[in-house]
Image (tube, rainbow, N blue to C red; front, side):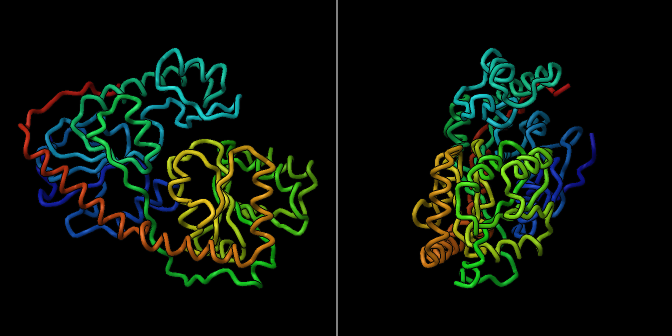
Length: 386
């Protein structure tokens, strides 16, 4: 057992994710550390094995595998950032059927989903490992005295459907750090550039193929900027060539913060066409920070951040006509686009800043600590992962 080398007056974040701009969780963690209150350490714990957990004021866990290392000797909060706790593939999306999976976890149903419905990897050994890991996670979730913080009500309901006690769950929507770079409402000049923006990983679940197939049904003056990289890019570049869209698309690849900010500033709308049920999606909030309206899929947690007709437009996933109609609606109306962008920015500043998020998180911390102190501190044993 290690010595007590942690400050017992501080709360510690625990994660195997990196802190930075590599993705949703990484970006979230970077913002969380930037805005952390005085009672939260700036030190990240990456493993809880061989650590005396009774010394901690509270642990805030972000990686599912760390749940398996808990001893139950201190108050614990777990942020549920994605579907990996209850979905072996982590997507809740049946690619073969192009539909969202509504099954709860089971060996039979999820094996069928992988082999027949093409949900995630179909490699045998990986499939077996994923099924076993999910089963182990869910067993732990039902036994631990942990507060599960879902980043959308959609995710919270999925946790409850898969056996997590409702009283141990709470919804806390994501927040973002408001960019330091000055942003302004959509001008008529920028609107007349006729540019839309896709920002995200170029993988099948993000819906870029749907957007490309929609683009051919929109006014030829509309240009698309694509910010991101991913394994699907070569195939989708070929598709764009087949659709004769090359003169309307700019592939920017991975973009740093400054480049991405410029792309937000030069578009009249941000397109968020995910076909899998996004747990939350920070793209919407990033667009609001730049006064830009969002056209997004009505899936997962996206509708909890995007107010249809107010801060953007929600469309059914994989519906080419509805997406084309939404793009044209904003393309043809500068005032509507500008107003939606302003409404989005106001909503962000009211509800979705990182300061507001941390304030609510501190309330959850305090409640978890108080509830832990009110019960007998009887350590429980969880089988360690192999």
